[in-house]
Structures are given as C-alpha cells and as structure tokens.
Length: 88
Image (tube, one colour):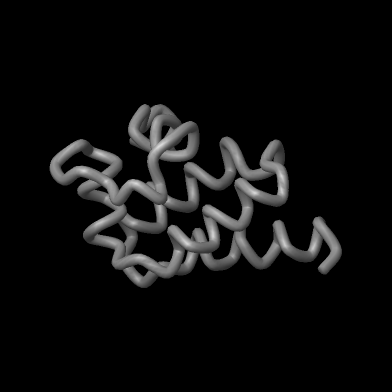
C-alpha cells in the first residue's frame, strides 16, 4: 500500500475512536509523530489501534503497564502526553 494512503487511513482511525478523550489522545499522538514513522512503527501503531481505548489511555497515563509488544519508543512517546491538543 502506498505510504500516503496508509498514513491517511491511520489518521482517520486515530481520530475516530468514538470517545472524544481517546480521539484527542490517540489522534493527537498520531498528528505529532505519524509522519516520521517507518513501516515497522506504522505496523505497531496499527496493532495499538486494535486495543481498547480505555487500555491505551491507561498505558499512556501510566496507570497500567503496557504489554511488552508495545514497549519501546512508541510507548515512551505516547506517555509524554505533550501532544494532546487543548483549547480553552
């Protein structure tokens, strides 16, 4: 699949989770980091998108430990939480 098409699909899936908080967390994370990912990182993000929003949010906030398969730079970046767009 073409890289640009794949990124567009990932963007849509990241921003259409069904819960506004998850959209902001996962979509904001994708917007900040997605363009720079290689194929393996996109594969891992696709796997992450298959998980439940509540689990992803718990991992990002450090409430629950993330599964080993997500350990590494992706989860480290997700835990920074500096990518969540907040408007006043």
